[in-house]
Length: 497
Ligand SMILES: [Ca+2]
Image 1: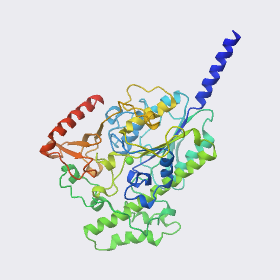
Image 2: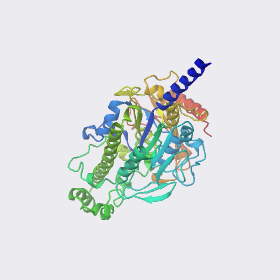
Image 3: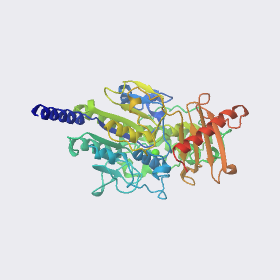
Image 4: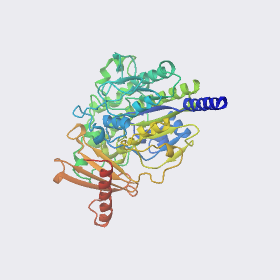
């Protein structure tokens, strides 16, 4: 009897020990951060070394090259992140109040908390109302501001002085150090506002990149020759839709934040050019591109610098060995490709999003994965890491085996996408589509597309920039038939009405 009770006690101790060793998770999430501006992803901006700390995460972990979203826009992406469900299942179709997020629904953090994790959400969540399932939450209201932000928590609203990217990081480190229950494993969501429009840099970074010329994409002057109504009718053109006051900060320059400490002349110079010179459309597009890219990259520099601070804290506190750090963005962004800024389209730059995972002892340092991952996988992944149950109605799959280098044999071969916010900002027509590693089929629909429905097909291997819509090419009708069948199959699988 005594031996038996000793054995039971021993087993309990072992299992308690194993539980305490469950890894912590820090999920660092930005808003609108393009993979094109992450050094580790290569590309035309790599030589600028825009993200040394994110690159370090990739060097110590795994980089995902084919991670995609299901609806390329801020609030719906966050709803998919928390629920593991696509927009039509979680109810958050658009950024607008017409589709409020139902916080009472199932979300991964509620399950994680029930299973012994401390949970925290700090920064931009863009879902109105009180958060649920977090031991601690303090969030920006709506889009939030770049400077002197007001944050909402269980205790109400409070304004803070300073640069928001720094403040969100300060609060996150403070939670790690002082506010959490240190007897439990934790999951912290550190969500930046940056680098969302209007790309306001920290004062100290205002003149970074000022004396260099940022390389342009080859399709900065795309004429959409083979594309349907949607590409022609969008309102996200750098030339036509990027505005002087807010986007290029002529008005911002008058604000106290910019004036404090003096505005560097070099920061002001290009804006003066914009206002005073009589430029051709081509010259103007190029000048606006330079201003836009530099402000964007400066915002990214703050994000990256603060990731460095978090990593330094993890090391100092001894947390780094048992803490998984994941970096991603709510979707990708156009850095002048097709002449655009913003997102929304199923084209690669906004459909795709960065994902980097540092998991010491599990993710092989410096490895690269090209499986098709989607943002509906994140919730399941967090639960899997914690050994918590994954509800059947979540629509993604845990990527834990993939992080560990073992892709399941039945892993998905295609992705479903659906964008709903039209009429709306930037006038991107509603569309849905299917993509695999070779082809992408897009169906634009609604009253403002020709005939109520228009299709595009791209051969991603031959045409990675998606300049040549081959839908009407008679030689690939077999491919179209297959892709349409796959679209139908995915819609059934995901229960799209
Ligand atoms: Ca966004």
